[in-house]
Image 1 (tube, rainbow, N blue to C red):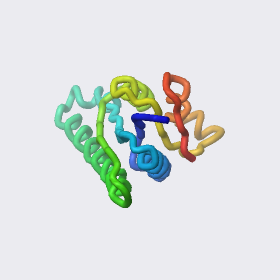
Image 2: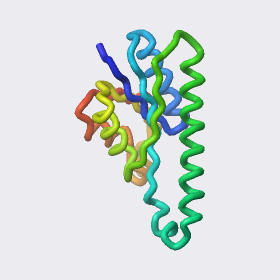
Image 3: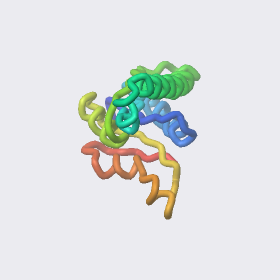
Image 4: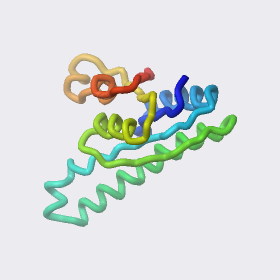
Length: 145
């Protein structure tokens, strides 16, 4: 059915659940799986302009967090039959835009993203990456809860 699944991961428990679903689907269908971590380089820009070392520290920490998230996905992939796994990290202003753009660039035909299941004020204040991906994506999106 699908040929290339894009898994959005941030290292959280919600994205780990999404990873389990995406890996199971990739394994069952014998398709390519891309695990994507999106870094937002801009929250630090105003401080980084005054102190370039601060921006470098911020980006180094973000890249380390991405490596840890990718390691979780790789570990899950190694627990069973082989999965054609590609690890990607991109920089974008918003996670949702980075996910949707990467799906387009990579030719993914399914996006799998986890949801923290927030509602009410927490969702209003924090937003929902999953909801934004669903709204912006041109390809099907599987939201794992």
